[in-house]
Length: 427
Image (cartoon, rainbow, N blue to C red):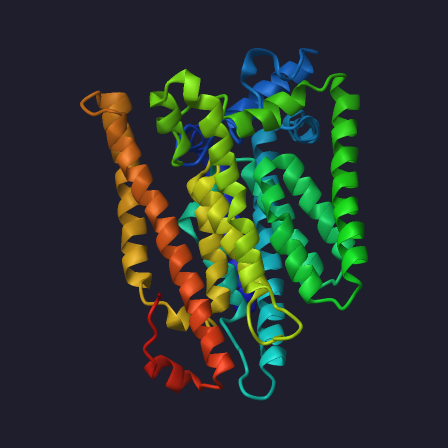
């Protein structure tokens, strides 16, 4: 048995056997603020199954915020005997497919960067089994999967969208995958510019036609999913409950994000203004990140459009209204792919790692002190949320600066040794 097969077998068995042998594990983890939100909660999904079985409107009571088609499809597993076993199998297979797609992307990326640099350097990166390990044994990913958070399905279609561009060279299929991811989770929409940027960089097609066709395909399939949801439920209420709830932050509940505390303390008069500003802040930086790292035809060796997608995912994890620790975990699982490109020029990896570990340890402790013991308050938990957000910013700044160093070396024909000996300053 090869190493990568062993990794997939062990990773799959952990995901399948733990929830099957310890059924109480899923309710415990799905109640965690760090792992679950009202938008991705498995408990809310079970409530939706009950409503569906009893012909009650899926969105009565304001508990369920899952899209109708997802509820209907997953209700099939809930109706089977030993449903907990089938759910364990479903989540296990989904995570294994994500890991397999990450391996494909890593193979493409090393080949692509080697071809892009010409004969000057060959990129090898980590072995396939290690790339799978970075995802399957990432504690943030594993805990999110065991909590049965529906964000896992969004990750699958997001990664599939990248695979269709890089390995399969099918941009239309990529747009369909991204449309499904957007249907499942609104913030996936913000990845459209960077994913289209990568697709365009890998093609040599007419600009206007390229963007017109692919954006139209994305919007068309998204509309098809919307009308299918209307046909299944008989109303458009799901738009308000699944998407406007996210945009307008209608359910103010504690999470690892930056929104909840500010809107709890804010006067109601100012809420519309700050809601608009927070949403604008979530999307406005995606465009400059995409443009700055775009691989222009005049300078094909500069930039990294694939990196712009990862940075966009990192930014969304930082600014979204209902984040979980798994959002950052997915980005951290992808970063090892940049071993031979930008990670060698990162200087703050140890500081970022230690800050990450400290925030993960203190977050549940501060929440427990606040909610259970009552000897703390919301400031305790929100303070650690700020540190968690600081981890995002540290990683984001580190990766952007490392890419700028790499671009400087390309522009000035510096070898890796010369580039490491060069001291650059930020102005």
